[in-house]
Length: 247
Image 1 (cartoon, rainbow, N blue to C red):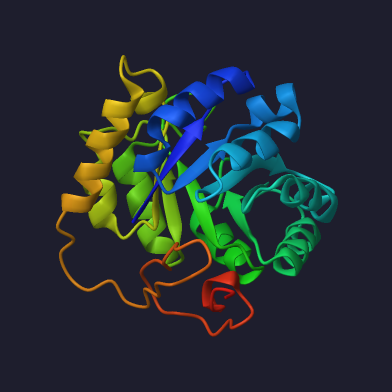
Image 2: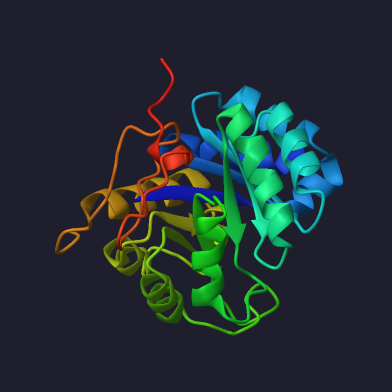
């Protein structure tokens, strides 16, 4: 399982302070939508330039103009972009097409889904790399779901999924054992007195968690190293998930 750090801050200066402290312990650096709105796509370029060996996710939360917005993010240096689950299928497909032309990927943000399990399957069929499912009590998770509820929804969907919202040192073991492909941490690092130490503790927890049972169709060596999640593997050789890394 990969560890993703959400830089849900307002300024690039704040993001750089946290990323420089924590980047060596995480696999994905996520630029939050607030940061991108405030600083523009230049923030994506700055984070990528500072951490060229780390996967950068731009949380664009695209609702329309999927190809255009994805193209802007990829041109700025993003490796992954988010599209809202509630976006029209054509919007998601357009973002995926642009992503594939860049050798990059699209993540479906499931924050608005009413029928989450069914929609998760649909967006992955459209080409999303994985679905990000949110836990939490407020507007960041309209259902008020717990992490356990998110895990169960992810498992039922039988598609690659990540868990976001309140993931911390206490819960990250459950996320790692769930079959999630990514755990998204935010305030557990960004609000910690020592972000570096917090990120290191989470990294150790992920790396030492014993995952019981076999997780089928996990394929390593992908461009961003994100394995596919549990469930029957669909035959989709055109997905970023199934393409060999470029040499």
